Image (cartoon, rainbow, N blue to C red; front, side, top):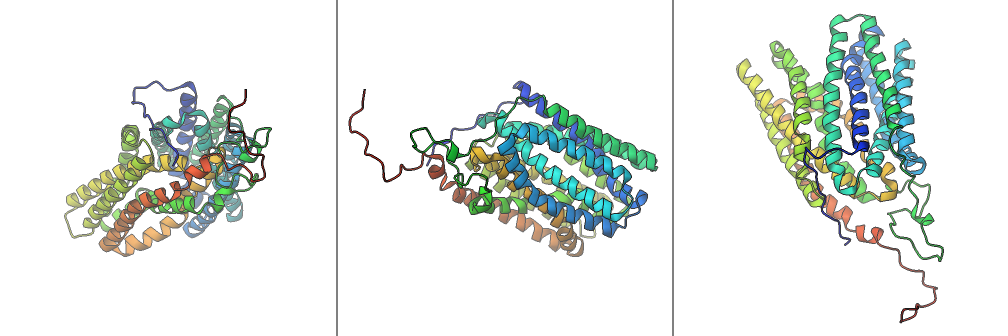
Length: 447
């Protein structure tokens, strides 16, 4: 098996490189716009545009379903055309699409715009990951992504506060101002990304052969099929992605399920849903980098995901206790305790999954592999709300325990899945065998 050097994770005080500072700035600006959009969009489309909640949910489900399949081809485009230009263009496309929301007045235009938005966002995520892979040394990627995640959460918090102003005012003008902020944020993101150094497009292994016809180094699985989506034939990577997707079912909990859970069982604690979201955001901002230090390679990454499964089980068990007939103060304490455990599990799962996604991907196909791995986010956003509202709101405490066991099972399955995917790494990292019909090499070196 090929030797993989131990990743060196810089401390929080290690100065960022110029490229990493630029990436962080772009992440912060886009996250502020995202925060304003996520906070205000649901009420804008229902109260101002006039869509029913059912139509809104249907449109978003269709949009993210389409977005889930867009990541691979757009990631492949980033590999072949360069991730910097691809990411910048997709950020600008997102800006234009969000601006189009300002004139949406019916379901069909909303559906088209939502599909374009989800597609651009999925492609932007894949291209940005490929950009990190091209600009950040291999041993520093998990630490860099941890910093970017902390920056993302800080930006979301600022954007959510600005979106909250629009919600408080409640007028059409206030909502349009929030959407304009989002559009300008992605416009600025695209321009900032263009300030990064250019990352050369990946060269397929079939084109990397020396002039004498000998096989080149760095062959990836399926790399000989230039122009094809090799990741779609990589069943081992698909298994790892599936396991990670199960872990990502945690995503709709704080944004959707917990507020509905509180509204159903303790309406007087309605404010707590927003407070727990802020708690999660602040926790990731402050501690994601520190949590990522423990991840230094595939074994530690798989271990982090396994630990995340156990912590998320504990979180679900605490949330399950809040279904019992307890005083309001006790329910509030249980919800806070469950949320604290959830953010810890989230940070461990994120750090482990970043390392796994990069380390198991061929170096010349980072874009399409990151796009495929990122489909888990789109699937969680599409299927998660329906699955979790049915399981938890109808199932109560037992439903929480079922979800927790599912997290634990996925966390424990990640290690075997990673080892299975890593098993043939030596063959696709090593040079391919020489063709059979070659002249035997001399036994003694020539001068």
